[in-house]
Image 1 (cartoon, rainbow, N blue to C red):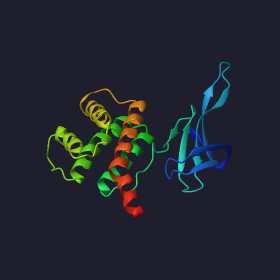
Image 2 (image 1 turned 90 degrees about the vertical axis):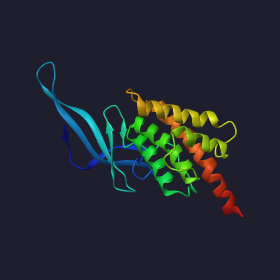
Image 3 (image 1 turned 180 degrees about the vertical axis):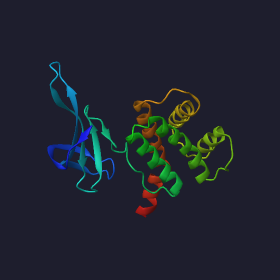
Length: 196
């Protein structure tokens, strides 16, 4: 592939995978590859583009089939998380998804169940099922939320113990459930405390 110098490209709207800002950029680079046609003539085939974010100045790659790397982090940040390890692990799960590391994202969400339990008072070193039971028995799982937590656990277990990788849809689903659980445990109580 041959990368060309920084230039004006066709403007592209996207959400920056680095800073999360929605942008419309026309500054960047494109890559082409010399190929041979049927009549042995050379031509340039476009292979991809790199657009530069005008907020953070970082590059975003778009393949010839328009796949974005890094993509925007899936879901939303959750406020009022009191434990920085829980917060960092959730953001890591979101970033893994943005890099198409769907199995890693699902595994992070499974690990979050243990981290949340320990953050809320469970002992370290328990069996994983003990952490699930702790969340349920101590009111950290919302009404009708037990299937969410069980789905996070089950898909996380298969990501951790089986060979086949997780798909994008599975990662999205688990991130969505995890975000809702974190909102229930941390954000909603935090909003109530700050409104007094």
